[in-house]
Length: 208
Image: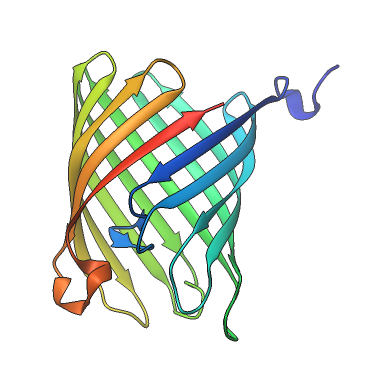
């Protein structure tokens, strides 16, 4: 059956991501492990799907996300754009429940060495104002399935503290379905509390 707009046939997939601590934009989101089930359908370089992640917050117990992703590649350069519609789940008090976000990522490889630039922008970060997070860093392929990386990020937002974040670590693919990752996170605003403090986080992503 021919697909509309010339898209290739759908390719459904399910992923399960588990981390010793939930992290987003350099900040801790959970006091313990975070589990993120994700389901999506791929049409060539286009994806649409949804996922949910648990958080520890006085406001809500999780965030559900609907997303659409488009990718383009030219030689050793890849560009991705993701549009996300986020909803707080299990709200414990009156609050803003919905927020949009646009993420763009540029990757460029130079043999075993690469560079990644990521920009995440929310025109309204739930009850806060605009928020932008910019992160850049190198990658080094140590072996076929092993990558060493480091990142420097900066987040500026209205209604909450700005901060600089760093993370560095290593990821390893075990076969075609499992990727394990270990990295250390830190920010320059650790005096603001546990969410901003340095920590070592281990994670695994299983594709089903």
